[in-house]
Image (cartoon, rainbow, N blue to C red; front, top):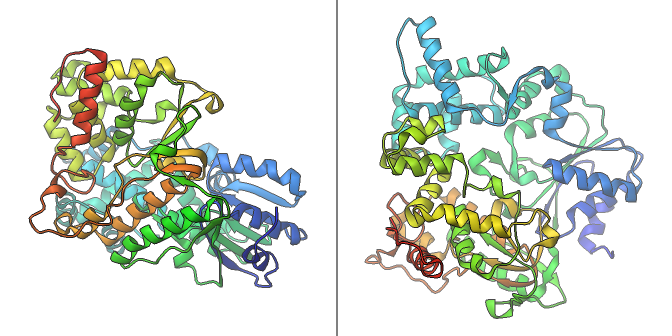
Length: 541
């Protein structure tokens, strides 16, 4: 592979520490490995974003002959250093466990009978996640204020927080202590936080250089761990791929003050497409007063438009949301092609015990509900209001799915499984959301129509925050940069002009608003499904 001038400048850099802002498909991993090869006398730690990247990098190390480089996720590093195997671990805190711990605490410590409402439990859970991902130490007012600034909280949650700040901090401390003392299962982010707080263990790691990948989506606590080291460090990422702020991720490329390099050429798609993507997205980034995208591509041509998709060859469907993906599934499932889901079918909220439980909640068959959290609600309307108040998008997607397709969700699931394959190489159609597609590429891509457009940005009725608009544009960018040869891009609606009488924003994209979506497209797909499968009609919404 011939290196670009930008890559050569980085590889030959005499700077000890720096950061690299690299566009999608720009060969950032290759650049880092070439830099490591040139500096092979150094003992290097490569912090991979996830386990799958760690595995792929370990294979590449054999090719580059870098025996002194160690590849690890930061959680794996912390796990061993902090001896986290002594904890009882869980991927997520269960609401009922939080409720139980709080109730027991109030009874034994304060001699009060106290049963927190679901919204309060959700607040405590979110605050635990925030604390574990932050670099803050003290459980005090500063923590609460920082949480408010970095969270997109609904009015009800803000009210709960404002009226109960002292109690919230007390209960937060109680939950953290319960994890530390092994009374309840600890999360992976918890032991990472414990690693950060234990300076004797987390500082002065035995490396000369630390390479931090996907630096736009790491947490403050991860940044704190790296910045506490005395060795050299290089951060690499793509500011336009920052799509995890809802997990309290921080863009280290913006936060850390170091000399900066850029990789602006993508080796994934043609320059014709790069120019179109750059021009179109920048029109919206500029509206949001965001930093503008600079990207070039290969000399080849990437074809744009559905008419160029060869449906006889494998292609990938990418949606913004799981519900948007369901809509595409309903459309394509009649083709009887072999299908595959990035991350595994079970990782999507199409059909699992939560979906079953919400379905039975709507049917008022509460005795069939198996998920404890769902048992706290008497009606699906109560659950929907809770989901809106706590901005639980998973619940909202499931409710839309059930409201749209009714009893037919079971038949949809059956038909999916009839054509499901376990190996991606065998698939005719790959289905994925944007977040699950990150870091991947496909020959042909079809983007669903549930991405942000100019209408949502300029229509002030939506009152979307700067941060949310920027992240939604980044999500569009990530999806749009997965294609190599052919892509059907989602319409950005660039010709739209603001009209104060335009009420369309009240039903186009429910993730931005709380009103029920009319969703014309959903109705059309539902009718198509019902017609082709000759099943009874259900009421949409």
